[in-house]
Length: 188
Ligand SMILES: C[S@@+](CC[C@H](N)C(=O)[O-])C[C@H]1O[C@@H](n2cnc3c(N)ncnc32)[C@H](O)[C@@H]1O
Image (cartoon, rainbow, N blue to C red; front, top):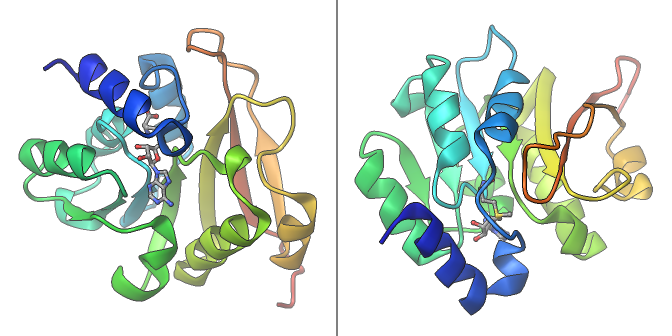
């Protein structure tokens, strides 16, 4: 089965979880990976799906042993393990980064459908990510929506600010990339 067919089959089976018409395009994947700081060594990826952003992260020179994937779909997990045997694939929800993953990461790259998640799930995911990110760490997220995919109250509770990219039209549907980081003066 091609990557697209596998994705489409899982979209039909689990529409809320997959929540995208197609895997992200090369333009979007490159823009996502390009937000990872040059100094980053360890990276976690949430919701890698068929692994198209994963490939771009590895192309940057992140060592497979320093990349940690969190994916709840067992079909995608199998595919990711076959393609990237040296990358750690956790068949767990992203929230588990806080308990099962590495003690520290420099960036989190997320393809999760944050917009369709409840406030408590967003809070759990972002709290897990920022419990493992240092002061210069970044959480990189794409969205198809018009506004930030993260609720304002959650961003405020974690002391986050963000930058956003222009809309990437070469993607189905067009998407925007948000980079969340801790405010410099945030006391926690
Ligand atoms: C919009 S797709 C993105 C796939 C891929 N990153 C891309 O850009 O084409 C969302 C992915 O998030 C996964 N997912 C949904 N909820 C999750 C959760 N709580 N933890 C980890 N993965 C999750 C889905 O199984 C799916 O692979």
